[in-house]
Image 1 (cartoon, rainbow, N blue to C red):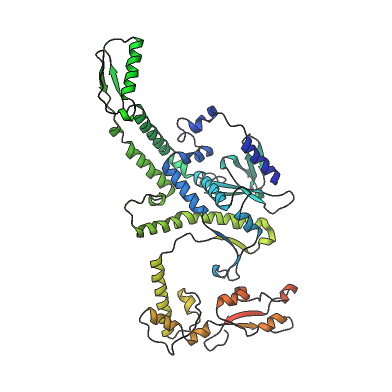
Image 2 (image 1 turned 180 degrees about the vertical axis):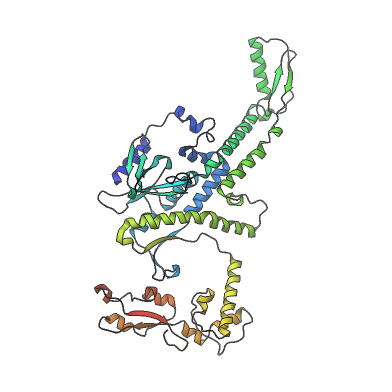
Length: 491
């Protein structure tokens, strides 16, 4: 879609004549949720109950607040060996998808769509004749329709503007995120569909309770009059009754009747209806549909600090990360390829939203250090001990004359840091010197590095000098970095 066409669509959406209220009866009137299973009805269900609103607001905000980075993959395939990319057109687009919303607002809007309808749609805008994406817009799911193809599964999409115009879009102009639907491979599945009757029940209960307080602060009753009243007498009696008894402030006042009238109480009462319990049961059904606990939406009754931290970690692991993974797949497998060769070897990844547990981290670090010290004392080669127990490379500045038995944390650290271990953490440059070896690589022969991080900065993945001149002429770099062995020799 050309940028001018997308602008025209958005302008029509902003200036379109509003649909008359009478044509929206299905969306706003009686049975709004239970009888309206349309995609638009699912979107409007966000305001049906406070519980559903809190869930959608909490999940969309948590997803939108997570930071993202662009990385260049390492030859080793390990995350820790990746190199961060700080300047790229794809990164600029993700930071500000369009001229009217930053990434946070974009992600929050599309996540609202996804959590309510099971679908999120991104429409890509380009300049005429340019393949690289220029802007991205989150589009309402009820305005998008896939066009199936018998041979190729999917032919494209159709966008329906607010004034009814249908605009065809190509496969490279739309990115769809969806929760798979078991009966329709082209559309998503919404949790809202499973709770529509519950949403109606909660809404009717709230309206009844509101009417209860506005009308009489009583479920109701009948005034019986033994004789027929004239219109004047009837209107006077009705107005007096309303003035003296209608409203919360007049609840439970003693009634005085004339003309032999008597009050007949009805059998239904507020206690009998049990609306409080009814609305609570509805809230439970809504949380079950989304797999959300009470603490996730701010109910911290009977909770301490430890359980609050556990609940926070659970929410990040079970709710936020799955949503981020779906966005990550869309970015890496659909958006990045649109940038062609400039995006080769790149990938987007989010920062881990799971909060650290200080006690667990301290316990784990102690156990790993004790394990490393025990392996060193038992005679294992220092090279590889840290990675074997899950510890990073540690710079060394001094060591005791000889290892001592490990009895605690201090002994564990002392056992790790010794002369042999220092040599094991040094990295040395090795070259294959032949006619294709460039001058820069020859000068690197024998150079040492304190740790792998420093070595891999010049030799990404362990080989290939970043200043190698031969690579520009199609030759493979003759350099690599290796760890020194126990006696200082490269392995």
